[in-house]
Amino acid sequence: MIAGTSAQEQAQTFITGKQYSSAMFRLFIIFLLTYQVLLSPVPNNGVFQYIDAHQDEFIQRLKDWVAIESDSSDPSKRDLVNKMMEMTKDYILKLGGSVEMAEIGEQELSSGEKIPLPPVILAELGNDKSKPTVCFYGHMDVQPAKQTDGWLTEPYTVVEKDDNLYGRGTSDDKGQVLALLHALESVNVMGLPVNVKLAIEGMEEVGSDGLEKLVEDKKDTFFSNVDYIVVTDTPWLSKKPGITYGARGNCYFFIEVQGARRDLHSGGFGGTVHEAMSDLIYLLNTLADGKGRILVPGIYEAVAPVGENETDLYKNLEFSLEEMQADTGVKQFLHDTKEDLLMHRWRYPSLSIHGIEGAFSGTGTKTVIPAKVIGKFSIRQVPNMEPSVVNKQVTDYLEAKFSERKSPNKIKVTMVIGAKPWLADMNEPQYLAARRAVKRVFNLEADMIRAGGTIPIAKTLEDVLGKSVMLLGIGGPDDAPHGQNEKISKYNYIEGTKLYASYLQELSSTSS
Ligand SMILES: C[C@H](N)C(=O)N[C@@H](Cc1c[nH]cn1)C(=O)O
Ligand SMILES: [Zn+2]
Ligand SMILES: [Zn+2]
Image 1 (spheres, rainbow, N blue to C red):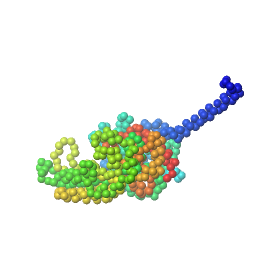
Image 2: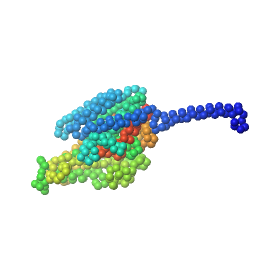
Image 3: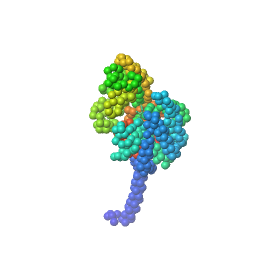
Image 4: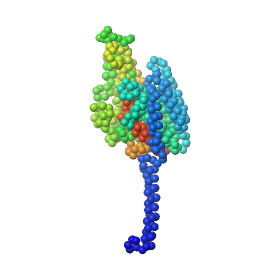
């Protein structure tokens, strides 16, 4: 008995207390469900659980795909690129998609021989007019890789070590495309919330030959109802997820220097001829100074001026020069602050020298004077630079420098790739959907970043289709794409799959 109350009053208090507890219990359950559905980083719809449960299968598929040496730069590997495109088609068919293998013509080799370009996959999953349509773009070709380049393991055999998956293409771009396709598989269990189109090519690493024309040709058919374009081929700036709203372009040049008719013995001819290699090294050395500043006259003229609040965009990004030093083994960069370094990576042009074809590059001490050498370099360009203008500036400059040298050798300068830079408005609706997706999966605010690399088709997709383009990648900052020991972490691969799944769900509630 409670002191000072009658038995009846006490009974009423007891009954009311019971009702109160049951109401509280019901409220608690409602709160829990609301939390799970709306607030929890793991939505209560089974998709994330599906992804977690299928991890091993997803990793095995990456192993199978990396095993195909789909190097687009080597014409003798064209069959393997084609095989990779077929494997990708088969998996999309298994997902229930319809697939067209679009033929895009031929590639003319330096010998004059012509070989077919790999077909582009144009696929479709879902065609509900009441839903928005998103077209994802990625590529199945890879950069060259040989174990003798300095890989610790065989590049085309995925090796699992320390929660990473090593192998050529694990990050660029087979792993990222697969994460998307696995997201489609996982979301499709419940039904896709948006219509999905896929444009997947096999020549991205050599400048996306033939793709621009295909986009133009299919503007009013395959691409006609596309509302959003997402490129699944870009790394984050740090371990924190990033959404990318800009990429640099690339103008890739060959300088050919022809000297004697054949290679010469340096004992018999050294000191008597103008050497092609010396001319080439001289020319390459006129391109940039020791601080990385490009010396080609006029090259900086078109570069967009730094906007009023632009540097503020860089301040809060998660990025550390020390981590970049640790990853690359470079002790001192050309720029000392985070802002300066990122600006030179994203919004200023840069020039890199890549190699010399025809030069002696083996081990040992061959004493030869190479007859013909081809120097290879590229200029990453930025808004508002134009590849045709860069081509003229570079060619005029090199020809003038060569004529000052008074060598009787012959030079030929050719721009073999002219990919445009691209920059979007990071407040477009699909960027907001991607930010919500990042929040949902990682419980973090995404970093809004740009890429120093190039997606050759990005600007064309935006210009020809007039739709929003976004790069939503899942590569890590230290994945070493194009380099030795390329990898993707299992974390990025699996959580990235969840990111694509969440993006699809978030996009369905976005109005364009
Ligand atoms: C960013 C993307 N994964 C990539 O690596 N793209 C290539 C495209 C390209 C440009 N010139 C030749 N290929 C790159 O940025 O190097
Ligand atoms: Zn790529
Ligand atoms: Zn690449």
